[in-house]
Image (cartoon, rainbow, N blue to C red; front, side):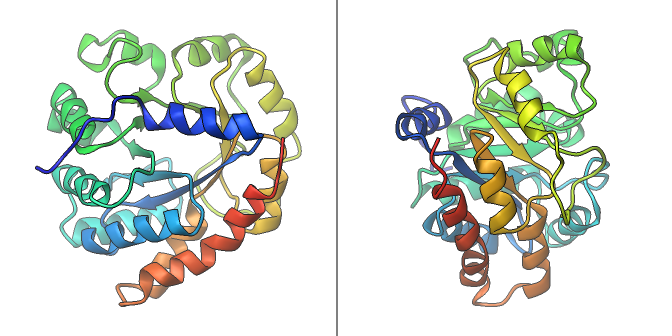
Amino acid sequence: MNSQNPPTNRLDDLFARLQAVGRPAMIAYITGGDPTLAASAKIAISLEKAGVDILELGIPFSDPLADGATIQDASGRALAAGASVHGIIELICEIRKSSQIPIVLFAYLNPVYVYGFDQFQADAVAAGADGLLLLDLPPQEAARNAELTKEKGTGLKSIRLIAPTTPPERLKEITDTAEGFIYYVSREGVTGEQASLSTDIAERVASIRALTKVPVAVGFGISNPEQAATVASLADGVVVGSAIVRKIGEYGDIPELADKIADFVRPIADAVHGVKG
């Protein structure tokens, strides 16, 4: 495996640089291996060139309950094309041959646990991953299972989710264990594009910021430059996922796929970059 270990975490370095100039981060999600692992590597590089600051790389899973139809379909396509946890690790190695974009792995616990949590952490870090968000592992459950708990500041950064339904008493528990950035889910339900944004994003982000200095990124349903600019004015990062994954599904494994995805994402990234804090 061709790999390298960064001296510091790319996520921390990136947010330090962006906060110094008052600019939010553009964060893009793709499902690893959709439509193929080779195509995902090309898409990742094209996204960085289009202005993406952080890549969220989904590990495909056969039962992605937190995701809507768009990402469920992408997981199905990736698995059918032969994607696996090991394949995603190799995909990170391939991306690292030409890019140092921060990479956050999005995963459900089952495939990581089957791979072996300690081995997964070691292999992912060696490949060049920077953070991990386990979608179906609540922080309090991780704390009760020693094999799922890493000392804070070691291994992959632990990205935490906060939802609109998260009660105030749980906010501090989550923010105390968060690293890299916090992913605020702006709507209830599963992932997917939305015609309009939630009206309480500013209030929710402020309540999180009152408890932590960890950057707050907002996602779930953001799909166009106007929505992205609005969220960028309220948060430290903007996450766009389903809209990109839908485009990948529409185009399929064509030679121009990476360029097509870059063309779609570039105006959204430009809208985020145009917002100054």
